[in-house]
Image (cartoon, rainbow, N blue to C red):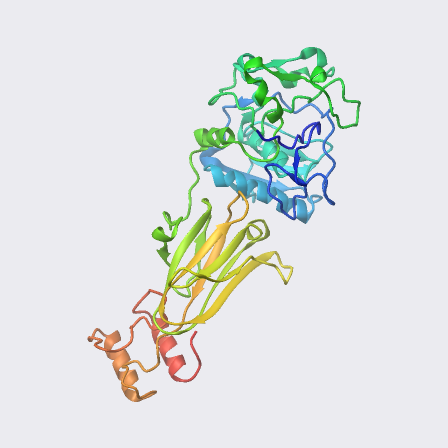
Length: 435
């Protein structure tokens, strides 16, 4: 049984071969022992704006949550926040949208603690963050904003845990009070990111310090039948299945892009050539076919913002499914647009593109596949360029039979006949090269 990063109280940290169990490594989210990590938040956290747990009734209509950053929030912490948002979006029908003039929105700012209102208040609602380098603490607070209260305040908790009131610091008992007006979903979840660490608000934690309390100091103890779950409390390393299912219960399943079901080679979808398409990558990866009519240069480009561009790999596969090239998006210009490009020179055939996630979250991506133009010897008579190529091209464009001529979809973008076919043909005939 794995032990999670205990980020709320900092009591225990499981390390296996120098790695924390659960959370994947990412440059914007250093592990607690790495350079750049925020200090683990002390046990005596400030009391939240309202006692929280379970599901509140004030959800966000259609799952649309508008947000705005305080000017003092750094670009790096905005990217971290957007990654946390993307992970939530990956598992449910919620979309976080930058605010323009909306009255109801989440205002994200630097704070001395991590806290948020529960659900939609109908106006400007502050979400404070101090633990910016912990992806799942950010997710914890945004799940509050979506309407989820703390797991230890469920009305059925006594079957699973005991709250040791004698060990709770004065003034913080409200964080453990059962909220009968809250609506529980599913069974009690010891792995939930919404469950406190078993040492949270313990009297054993001196003010301003992190704690390594023993069970005698714990504020939450698993019932004997669930003693094996004790070490799961306070998970801030991953979203549990219960977290994901609870979000779906209120906001519905996530909406993938229009290419589903293309999660494997057998479901690969044909991409139009030289026509950008939008992807979301809700699943682990997407597969596409790229029909190439004639030998020549073959390439594809995947672009995204920083929060989405740092978690994918683009691969170009041969007609026999061998990986020819692969690349991860980079931002050499420093403009916040991450781009991955794969290219090769190959024979005619059906190539494939594979876009796979290297982190749990999805995002918004633009994929563009590029292939070769058809041969300028349109009528395939071995003489080119000649007037007859032009005559035959426009005759076929007008509806005449093609016979042995090349495809009328000259630019191979799977849209024909169109003006771009004519432009591509004339430009190539004049020596301008394939667009």
